Length: 108
Image 1 (cartoon, helix red, strand yellow):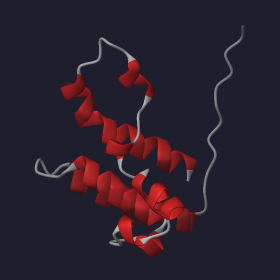
Image 2 (cartoon, rainbow, N blue to C red; image 1 turned 180 degrees about the horizontal axis):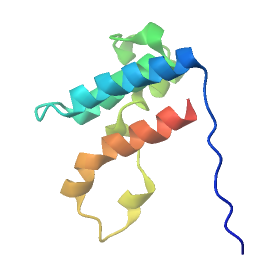
Image 3 (tube, rainbow, N blue to C red; image 1 turned 30 degrees about the vertical axis):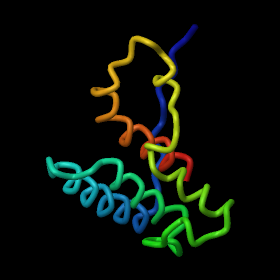
């Protein structure tokens, strides 16, 4: 099988600047040792997917909308690695919010 190098695909200048700003803010927040990564993930994904519901109590919404919002929190989803017996739940719990954030950001 032959290896073919990937080509670089550029985004527009405005999008590039927006991504850089967003990633810088995310980096600053993640570098805070006291940050709750689950809450941060939930906040960021809610802002991306459902900005109109930022800060709204899911209990005040229609059931389907509440379920969609609950899925933004990594504590309410199960990722594949969690099914394996040899996982270290404590170590995995630290990175799970970042994995969920990456997967959902990528899908957005």
